[in-house]
Structures are given as structure tokens and as C-alpha cells.
Length: 229
Length: 229
DNA sequence: CCAAAAGTGTTCCGGCTACACCCATGC
DNA sequence: GCATGGGTGTAGCCGGAACACTTTTGG
Image (tube, rainbow over all chains, first blue to last red; front, side):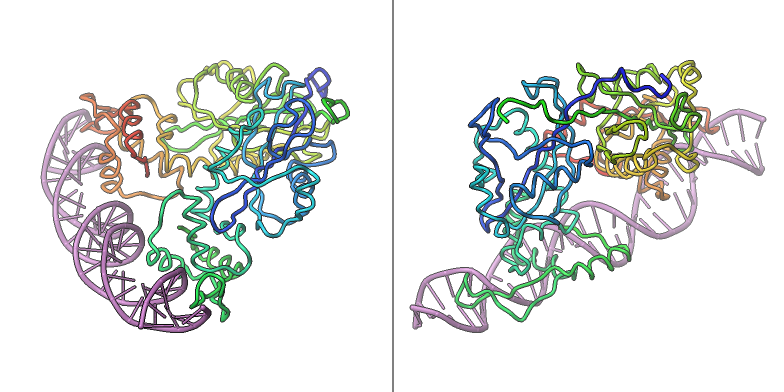
């Protein structure tokens, strides 16, 4: 078969994006109501096809941008799904990606244009094809990732309270955490900056705001530090 | 674009297999000398193209079988590689898979037929395309996987000694382990069966052989147990 | 009897868990 | 002055790390 790939089969390659957000209460996913057949009118992940000139990461970012208007978002390739008849129209394999966005940052007009809506992960509608399977896998990956890497911050505003951070981990991990132990652990990792400012919306006393210090984190990592919640 | 995928680009999809073995001394990889252009004569992972009627797992198993004659092997999808010019002949994305095999089980005749050879992971030759990158990723994944799942046993004979098991973990993790602590940890997980038999080849005294007890392991997992080395 | 690998326990330390009270403020 | 969420410390326990000597037996 010297230098001859001609008799090989070509297939369509899609990317589907699992877009996570966090609204201080629940972990959410951005889904779109499918505007074309097959399965028109059903809920689905936002997807698109890989183009000849693109790499997978670019295709996934393009899809994400189309729906949210966001760039430079934390995104990770998840898994390749390839059941022969997963898309009834034509053989298509799909690379699932997941993204973590700050739920307040995206462009709401684009949601309307794409008939998109946020759903709590605990109240998902029925999804087309194998998208439910993709989401299951993404949730498992998210749990592992947020436990061992400081990516949870991607789901929060730049400035956040300890309460928000703890609540985020609680909904991702699916368990309640002890307030004192949580703060102790986070603080002794020493990768947050405590600001002078307080958030006054959640209580009379107000609670201090924090920022993730990426430079400090990376410096510590190069000294052998591992983030762990 | 109702029900019309026609204007979308199709691409070739390859699978490349990172085949790990362990020879009591070193972690090894099975590589083939490429018999066709481009890069003919260079070393490469064993690969093949996805067919219309196959899912990715099947394609990867087919490729593995072609080279080793083995079926029912531990294999896991690793990552999708998609640089536009990664294959200079034609746009091809590749799904990398890694497999863990017992190095004594495969059919050596097939290695000759495919110009394949085992290489220690510490002494790899130059590889074509992005295969080096694939291997790096596979090694990282293997370290994580063997630390949290009992998949290391896939690289050993059915009956093995504690010494072999420890050595295996040492080469995968890249660090020396304390013999007493290691055995204590393994034994208290209580997922191995100690046989009456001894392996007499490694010492005058002989060392007891063990088997992994998969049923017991799975039962313990369903009770909340987690394997951890 | 000696060489070479197998086998085995204890102590110490650090990190995780469990747990309850005072503080600041707006109303 | 009281209701609401914010913030903080300690004691006990468990698991991991360090560490050395005895056993077996073929030559």
C-alpha cells in the first residue's frame, strides 16, 4: 500500500461540546434545541463538523464561540464516540469536548439565536444520540479534574467567596463538605489571594473575596506542589 | 441545513496502538518498522484506518490482533491527535489507543512478518509523525491508571511473584518502593490469592506465586473499595 | 557454611476528620 | 437586640514512611 491511502474509508468527524456553568446553586449545562433533522426539536449538545483545515481543538473552540461568544476558555478533549449508527443520517464519529465557563460571561443573545438553555445537571432533558453518555463521562472527568487541578475556578467569577468555592466543590463532588476543614485545606495550599473587598450581597457581615493566583500556583507546581481538594 | 451533511468535509481516521509489555526488568513498547512511504523504514506505532463499518474500539483491536494475534486484551482509548499536517500524505486524524499485554503471550512470528520489535521505553528510537507525543501521553495515563486500578496485572503472567509485581510498579512509577510497605499495602487490599506454588527460578528459597482475584476485587468495589498503590 | 533472595513488624509523623462557638452587621 | 451568615482551633485517629534482621536452600 505504498503511499496510497486512496482505498481507505473517510468519515465525518464532529465535535460536541459539553459546556459547564455554575450559578451558585447548581452545576449547569448549556444545551441547544436542535433545529434540523434528524431529531429536530430535541435537546442536544452544541456541535459542529471538523473542517479540513482545522484541528479538533479549533473546531471545539469554534463551536463554543458560536454559542457563547467566548474565547480562551478552559476546554479539554474528552473522548471519541464512534458507534456506527450513532448519527442515523451518515456515519459520523464525534469527539466530545468539555468546557468550563463563567456562567455570567457569555452573550445571552447568542443563546436565543441558537435556541439554547441552561439545565441543571440533575434535571437534564432527554438528549439525542449518545449525548447522555458523553455527559456522564464529562461529569466523571470533571470530578477527577477539579480534585487534582485548580480548574474549578474557571466556573467562578474572578473574585469569589469561600462559600461559593465550597458550594462549587460540593455540587461537583456530590457531597457536603465541612466548612472549617475546607477553608483550612484551601488556605494552606496558599494559591489564593485574599482581597480587602467584601461581598455584601450574601450577609449583613459580608464575606471576603478571593482570587486565584495563577502565577503563584505555577511556581509552586514547579517546586513539586500538587493541588488537591 | 436540514438533514443535509453533504457539504461537510470528510477525513481519514486512523487508530494507532501503543502496546505495552513488561519483561521483569523494563517497561517495553512494541514498534514496527514502517514498510511504506512516507517515512518508510522509520519506527512507528502499529496503526490502521477506521473502516465505515467499525467502531474505534474494534479498529484498535483489529490492529492489535494483526500484530500480536491477541484478543481480549486490556485496551483503552487515549486521545485524538489531529494536527492538520501530521500525516503528510493526506489529512488524517488519529485516535491513539494503548494496550497492556503479557509480553510472553503474543505470537512472535507476527512480529517478524510486521518487522516489529520491542523497545524499552527508556530507549526508544526516533518515531514518525506525532507518535512520540502519543507515547508520552500514554505513559502518563498508564501511571495514573495503574495507581488507581488493578490493571498492572495485565502486564504480568497469570501467576506472579511479589517481586515481579513490585518491580512492575517501580518501572511504571519511575521510583523505588520499599519492599515491606509495598507488600503490606498489596496484601491488606486483599485482592490477591496466594498460591501453594513457588517460583523457584529466582532464588534458592523460592518465592510464592499469587493470582489476582477479579471476582473478589469487583465485589469489594461494589462495597465502596478503591484499589490504590 | 556461605551467598542470595524471600519474608516479616514496629515506631513515628503528618494529614484528615469531627466538632461548636463567637463575630459583625442591618434591620 | 436579634437574626443571619462569616469566620475560626483542637484533639483524636488513621494511614504512609522509614527502617533491619531472620529464613531457606542450592551450591
